[in-house]
Length: 132
Length: 291
Image 1 (cartoon, each protein chain N blue to C red):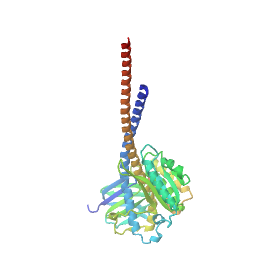
Image 2: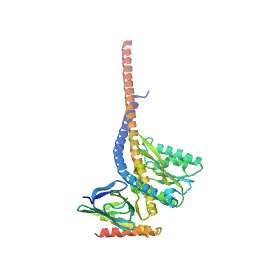
Image 3: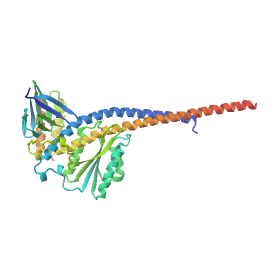
Image 4: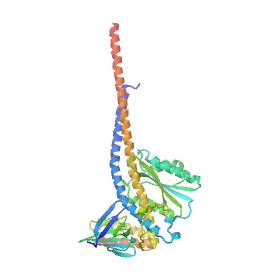
């Protein structure tokens, strides 16, 4: 099909995911959710904590990311991220740990507004995940 | 000449040393494979990161106001050197090669009247440097508990560096590590990470203009600290592959040397045994003759 494009998600430790039949990706860009379809203009943006939605064929996969950078160019979407996991087989206790850690970070008073916003966002997303 | 008993003891002790070095070689070989794999797996990330930064910085409109991490503070009086070594010894020239490289760089700095600050990563580097540069070492980080190089550790180092940079504790930052070429060859490297020195790779350069969201400055500001951690992580991966490779060839040599030593000692043992027998025979014969 002509509506498909390539997707590559890499973490520092390995190439996390590689697909060439993706039709739509929704990423939590810093200024709001951003949907990417084929032939999108070349763009660079970075991510806030949130959920990446990947539609390919009849499948739909959801991943949680902490942060990252997205680059779209020549119909290839590259996502660089340091912390990512599949929501389907995620570990509830691990999520709880992450919430606790983030809340700890939030309580320190050394944060500037932007960091505080990002972390509170993270807590929100993680909490909604742990409820499902 | 040593007695037969002494020789026997020495042979068996060399043999057991040989067993140990052989085992260490096997372990290093297994670990090397894993370290090499993870170094290869980590490559796409740092390459992509490099590409993006290259694209961003070449399209930067206002070079004067670019983030400090990219262009530096405008001075180069205080140098921070991050010396990355292993936590264990017995790996040939691995650690001392890095130290040698670092020391010659330190000397160059002090000849030019620059101030030197050192962060050591890995306990072996600290052990070797603390004798001469004790006052220059401001931090000593070691990841003895973590088995493999992981990004979490690299990030910790990166954060320390950035914090110090933001507090204006240094102007230029250089990291030292061993680049893995093959099992026998590891090349000690110095790499300047602040201000960022671009390895201009013309093939990857694109004239295509990007759309940025939010603007370039903010993305760069977000990206550059990550790039520091990524570079550190890359160095850690290269280092761990180099360490295992270096240990493997060192232990291979040790095993071979031990084998040679065992051969030599065995010949000596047999000779002196034969000599003792001959001596006894002569005594018996000459005793019988005198009757």
